[in-house]
Amino acid sequence: MGVGLALAVVYVLASSRAQSWVARRSPSLFMAVTVSSFLVRLAAIAVILVILGLWTPLNVVAVCLAFAGGFTIFSAVSITAVLTRSHATSSAESKTKALGETDAGC
Image 1: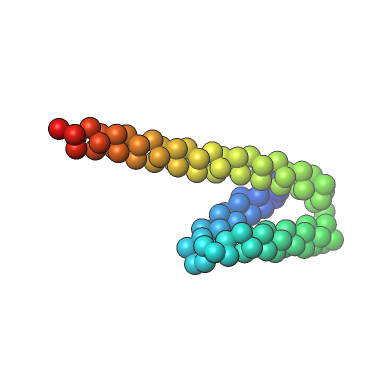
Image 2: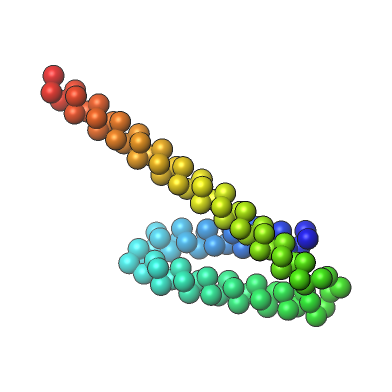
């Protein structure tokens, strides 16, 4: 189970780093590169699971389930953090605009 959770942590960190790097480098190709990087990471995790299944006594089904559960939880936490940050930023901007509009009228 620990192996699956460790794989999920590495996978989530790699995906968030890759997406932020792509967003900075080429915003116009963001979706295409995001999908292709997802497929590459999915292939990499499949190769890792096959290697673990062939060369270690680990239960591959348990590792897969731990990975899937961990990935779901870590993704939900990171998405919630991003949405909370963007919501707080947009709320602060709207409050600043509202204050700026009332000050301009004085």
